[in-house]
Amino acid sequence: MSRRELVVLGTASQVPTRTRNHNGYVLFWDDEAVLFDPGEGTQRQMLRAGVSATDLTRIAITHLHGDHSLGLAGVVQRISLDGVPHTVPVSFPASGATWVDHLLDATSYHHRADLALQPLSADGVVPPVGPDPGFTLRAERLDHGVEAFGYRLDEPAGRRMVPDRLAAAGIHGPAVGLLQREGVVEVGDGRTVRVEDVSVVRPGQSFAFVMDTRLCDAVFSLARGVDLLVIESTFLDRDRDLAHAFGHLTALQAATVAAECGVRSLVLTHFSQRYQDPAEFWAEARTVFDGELTVAEDLDRVQVPPRVH
Ligand SMILES: [Zn+2]
Image (cartoon, rainbow, N blue to C red; front, side, top):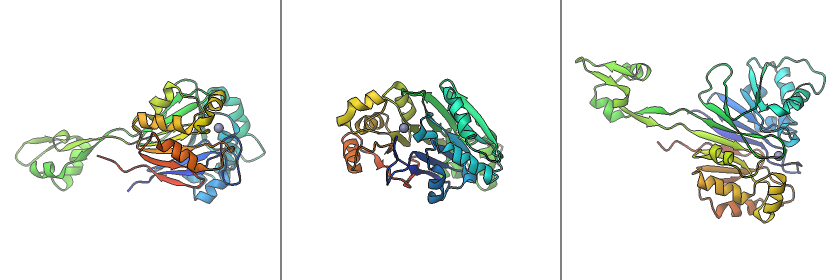
């Protein structure tokens, strides 16, 4: 079975704490591993979580505040040191390009990393680099103090063979693979069978990553119907005014988005150091969201929920 799992590296907002590193998340998706928002300390958190630099096939940055990007310097130097052989695309808001340049050239090291820089200046699909990753990655502009983009990953719909229909059509053995590849196959008596006749549509799985933002349309379109949503909830709702002033969400707002969008599994993260008890975030989110709920801790692992169809 393919690996589809989120590894949480860090869960603190602006200021790391004794128990929370700056942000950092690795989404393992089949043969791909996307590192989202490497905050300070990401290299060491990867070590603690058993994620190697060579695992990484893409880096996606929402915005150029330190808690989402200071770790890029260390991670890229490690990619370089380890001689990672493949190209690693790095996407980020185009307006942050100067800071990305600084982070990639922050200290003296041998520049051996093969990076493909992908500055984002508009909503849309972030093009793959190299082999087809088996998903599309889409970026949409959020509403924060500096330019920020959220991300959404979608697996294209496929087809699931129905054994009874295959048997009724007299298709078995190597003919099944042939039918999947060619879309049509001829059976013994001259009849042709199309793949649609013996299979049903299998919807693709999806994932969204929504960091620092006020509520805006993009939050909803990124989260719509995803299997797994990682979303910031910096504040509790009693501090809703502060959240709005600083361009952030509350746990109640984040969970309401998840409920309205039909999200299956919700991961809250990016907590302000002002709060001591994570249970408050859980309780607040639970008032409106009844799906799978995780108030993230560093080094948590959260599975993409199994397919329904
Ligand atoms: Zn932040």
